Amino acid sequence: MDIYNESGYAIARLRIEESDNNYNYIVWCTETKECAVIDPIDPITILNFIRDNGLMVKYVINTHCHPDHISGNDPILKVSLSLRSKALVHPLGEELIGTRYGTVNDGDVISVGKQEIKVIHTPGHCPEHISLILGNNVFVGDTLLLSGCGNTRHRGVVEDLYQSVSKLRELPDHYRMFVGHDYAEANLKFALDIEPENEDAKKKLDEIEKAVSQNKEAPPTTIGEEKKYNPFMRYDAKEVVGELKKRNPELETADSGSVFKELRELRNEWTY
Ligand SMILES: [Zn+2]
Image (cartoon, rainbow, N blue to C red; front, top):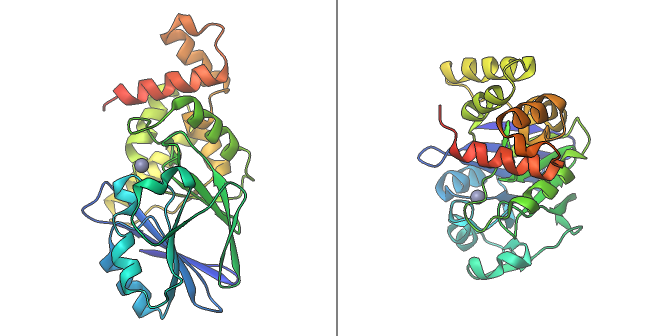
């Protein structure tokens, strides 16, 4: 687990063992101790953390309703003392979660203590997907991953995912990106398969491999860093476009959306 202390709020990032390398997050107002839990899969670890730090759950926020992002909702809401606490999801995910929930839309602001979390609708990985902005941090769920993006196998639409990634790419470079899963190693190897000369991807892969060998967590990256090596944010970089056209001459006159789609298809089939 790692904790990021900021002015007025803090973020705990928990990497969950025995999961698909899921990350769970707890964000809280350091003044009021009110917290929100994002995408819980391991309620016991989360509830222990909440108790040990004297926090009160106001919301569980689900970036989307895939089972591995909502399965911890009910146990957390059941033991949280406040009746006001509930899960928040985008309306398109309403039918997929249990009781005690509310809905949030693009542009809404969620108050947690004195802190405000802004909602952006980022469909594509699935229709109800939202991303969350708190200070200079963005919680992207499975829309983006370190050097990758989510797949579209379960209710996804690749054209929407392209639009959402494009939207997130417009965020300030210094925004720290908190992702739903750690697939960093495989994703960086894929990036290097597309762009073998990308020095930033090589450097990042070295950093990640070193952290893994020392049993340490790699810190979250930033939007600016990702733009240097994440192929799904480089759909208009000449190196990426050139390589894809080489592989598939039919892409000769392709727009960025088609390049993105081709990248997603290549990644679906790629193994290392
Ligand atoms: Zn998912």
